[in-house]
Length: 115
Length: 109
Image (tube, rainbow over all chains, first blue to last red; front, side, top):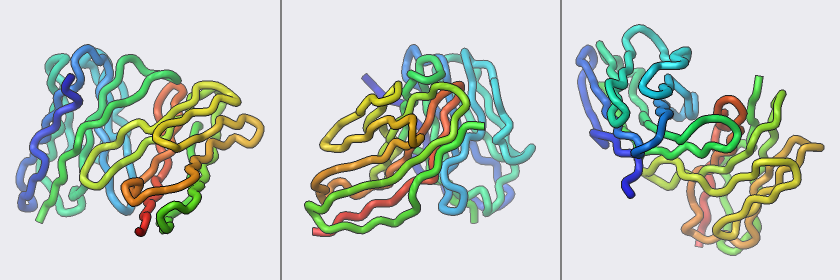
């Protein structure tokens, strides 16, 4: 069974460009999470969806970041315009339900470098 | 609110040494506790979990016991291997999942 799939695995772009990160959750999972990992801040939750609906986007750093989930099998995280401080590894995770008993399954991440 | 605090790294050990990574938590409800591991270049994956007080989670020689009286969930392994080199995250799940800052472990031959 395929796990969480993310693309691209690596992205190098120049400041000011638009960046789109993609995620396919595990089939049947109803929660999808976007995280950002940096050395300085560790693992930060950016936004999560339940049944394709954004539930909590309080972790989204600013208006340059947006996320969508048009259907149960696909989500995007977009940064426009990108800045060097956005350089990080971005993880997507999914789970079946949420709460005390629900494990999150992580994708391999997208390493973003903004020059 | 709920939070997790884990010992800062990095931790460097020789092969076959004993490992302890401390984790304490603050929670208002009755959370489950997790340890995730992140190998180089990969995403986080669940290592073990415990869903109630006094439960012991175990996997791949790692163990952690849910201690409500000390609000702790310390990770232990009796004899580490080079292949255990990774970043370890303690996490708490109640209404949402909270991760610790991560502890980098390097095991030298």
